[in-house]
Image (cartoon, rainbow, N blue to C red):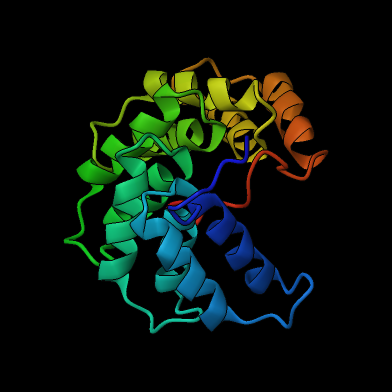
Amino acid sequence: MLVVYEKVDGAAQTRLAAMYDNGYGVTQNDGEAAKWYRKAADQGNIIAQLYLGDMYDHGRGVPQDYGEAVKWYRKAAEQGDTDCQESLGFMYENGHGVTQDSGEAVKWWRKAADQGDARGQYLLGLMYEKGHGVAQDYGEALKWYRKAADQGYAYAQRGLGDMYENGYGVTKDHTEALKWYNKSARQSSSVKARPRSNNQ
């Protein structure tokens, strides 16, 4: 029996947007990408909400509008998307489209970290190390850095190296610092792209 789909497929719209976004099979066109991402995002497609938020965040295909970026990041973040939870955290940490609030940044990064996301774990560790949005706590920083480092996240491995080199929350140990710096230096941080934090 032939099934007729009467509702437009948000996944198909997202894929079409990605073709325009990347110039696959068509001339690359940010405006067309944004148009199709919006159609899918309006239907609740998380991936489209992420990319539409990113387009508003960076002014690609649409005028830069941090408020719109926050709106779309939040929609997907509230559905549990870790990339959008991280992006929303950056918006709060940097005061883009919202009142600057390091505590809110921590809240969203913790949501990503609690789902096992390595970048979220690193960012949460960074906030504990620096005392941004939370009381400074080297023990918590070590805990979250280690979780991310064990997943191969290079920035967290570097963070652990710093902690051991300087004796933050641990006995100063140059051998252990060297181990973590070596791990960090030997990889490309392939878990995710470099975090957009001002606190690195």
